[in-house]
Image (tube, rainbow, N blue to C red; front, side, top):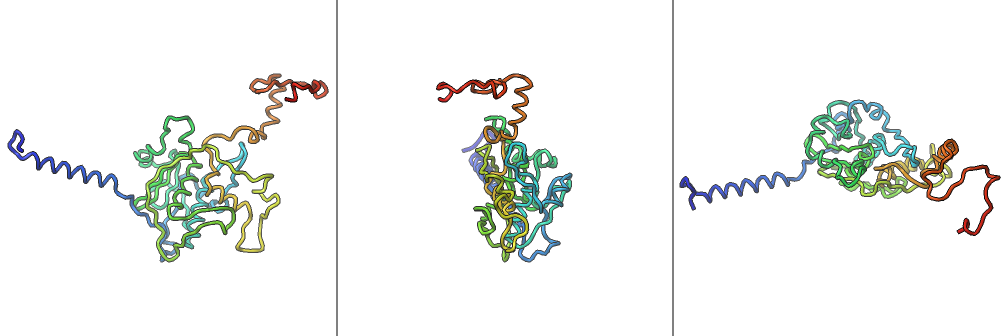
Length: 307
């Protein structure tokens, strides 16, 4: 078959097909492999965990992560928790601990950054933008969205919030088989990379489907009420607050996509609400009939009030 110029059209068509196949193979190529720790690497050859500029306090203080809050006024999972979980996992798997740095150049190492703190090349990245966009379902769906991609010189971990970074580092180490199954050092599945390279190879976007995820200890047990805290006689054991921090991050219940509410989680606001009601003489917003007044003026109970 010839075209209007007399050339063989089928040859050109075949070239187009081959070109399309080549483009398809490039688009579907496996992500690069990033080697985080080699078995023969000494401390001077280990790649860093890179944080954006301005996170020096996290870079120097990550070994003492903030307590994960359970109430509406307490903090959710932060960068210290994310770095601590990641480096603790790497140490357990390889016996080596990565240095943690804070700097403007986010081109090497394992990069942990929120989108707002990221360098321009990361913010402009099409894969990052697609992974972290709001889907339009509601105002909260992208709050913990994250994106992970391994490259030759770095593993990029970027999220909209610190809570999203906590979710992302769990996803990263889970890709090589590391998993926190419960509280305590005996409840961690730790693959052995002491004699082989620890490498990551993935490109993944994720976000929680459940915006508030909480499984709470009662009466302050995560802080040592009725449980073990401080220095323990057995070096193989650990205080409950350390176990709880690791487990809650690993179980993905340390972060939140929307503020905690309502019911028991509102108990911290009870006094403020009552004071507001008294000051305004208003009970607007309550679902049940509510009267304001001294206890002595409370009406007697009746059958209608008992049902």
